[in-house]
Length: 102
Image (cartoon, rainbow, N blue to C red; front, side, top):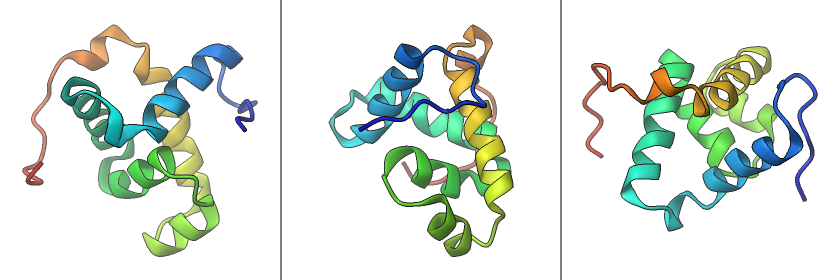
């Protein structure tokens, strides 16, 4: 079940679209996988792995924040940026990304 995030100013349908695209990460095309990963790196900065985990799994923010030594507040803030960046055309432009072996 999907619950709309009140702090994210996108419609229920748009939020659901992004959420379910991320939850089905393994089934997505390489293009969508790359988009998800790039957005996590851009929006999450040093905590991109935590953002990737919260977007692609159903684990709790509390457990993810503790695992990655970050705050829940930072994780929520980055998640909000991720949702908005998904529909921002300028986010499609590639930037210099760190070499992570994917």
